[in-house]
Image (cartoon, rainbow, N blue to C red; front, top):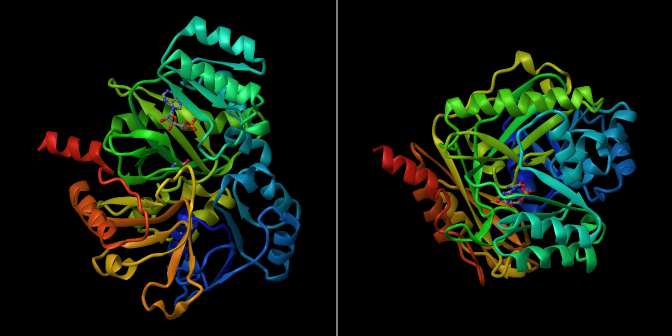
Length: 440
Ligand code: AMP
Ligand code: GLY
């Protein structure tokens, strides 16, 4: 079968890698993809880059019709929010993802907050503002810590967790007065600071039923000890020990199932990956920090390393409304991924620095997923054929019998790789490691 995959990052590399293992998949076209994704081509599965603009839904639809594509899988949020699923479904094509109306859960934080209020889903108290004066007044009334968020998509940069009034007021000024985030910051959500430990909970949803994925956690802060600016994610691991089976039941009953039911009640049924970012307090009570309408990046990389089941069978069942007939089998081992980023990510990106050691890391037993690389112009560089081309460059992922073993191997793989001004965190998974050590 022929699959069309939309996207080009580490998440999409992991999706292509896993889909290529399916005996049902003979060809994957990936738009725009990357050379590293194409390199997953095997004797059974050919992978090709499709140089179409992911905003050009009509051209992608035409390709899917002409090539009789069996299923289109969408990685990133932008095409979902822009209505790619609506366009494909109108053309009678099979695609996995929410329509634009349901994708508003990620596309607008104000919409997501109203949705949670409407359906009694636990989340931080909030208020929404378009006027800077009223926002400043609200911050003075509430005090700090407080969280200021741009309403729209801002690639993970539109959230300020303010510890001081100065920071909170400056965030409002940047968004509402200086228009630093353009339209995405024309409305701001100001919300209560939630204390606790974050976890990511991802479920595959078919409109009615949901198939929960294994639990996972990521590290969003750039620097060790979870300090420094917020990023797209510096590493992730699965399972998340903070999500005990009791906490998982609570998340399913009080958050995920009411979300799926609420989307149906609102007339915006959801198909695809529903990602709930959670803050879990010391009593195990979870509240929603954010919704994403797609798989997490980098959570997908360690998650898919643990998935034993055939991914295409799961995705097909989601599109066909048959997830209640499906069981996902997860490897009981732990998986951990360390992101290798450009020197001053998230401020800027790496471009054209030669990357050494990918083969060495894989020889150790790691799987190296590419987030921002391209082929070197001069291929005579032997094994080092990739150069940097982005903020997050690679995600070095490994399995282990426990989190300590998985971390040891991923860290070793990361240390085997080198490019100019490479930055990565040596403490990915530290909370899970501490829990394991405490319980020993
Ligand atoms: P978001 O884009 O909404 O997920 O926010 C990015 C990050 O900011 C989250 O992963 C949290 O680390 C932090 N954050 C967001 N909202 C809150 C909140 N209400 N309380 C504490 N931290 C938050
Ligand atoms: N890792 C966080 C995200 O994908 O949004």
